[in-house]
Image 1 (cartoon, rainbow, N blue to C red):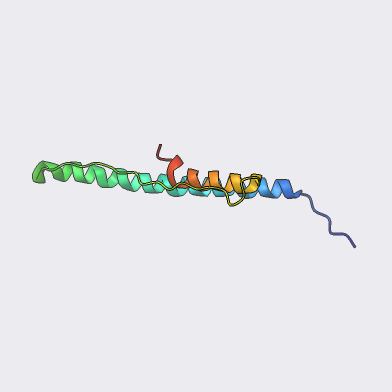
Image 2: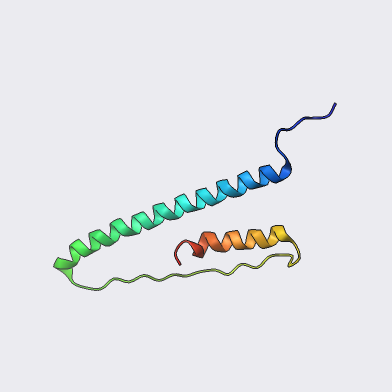
Length: 88
């Protein structure tokens, strides 16, 4: 008996890609929101303490394990977007 499926493998891959993208964007948005809140607190306290504030972006570069595999290229791009893409 053959198992019937409503979705193809390509459809399932697309759903997981979109879900992982949305998840990474939500995580990064929360991270940026926390920085914003801390920055505002620092600006408020700076009136009393003085000092300066700045940001540093440390990124990683990802390369595909197999240069000829489209899935590896997509994974490397997705990893780069997760770590650096949101902030640039």
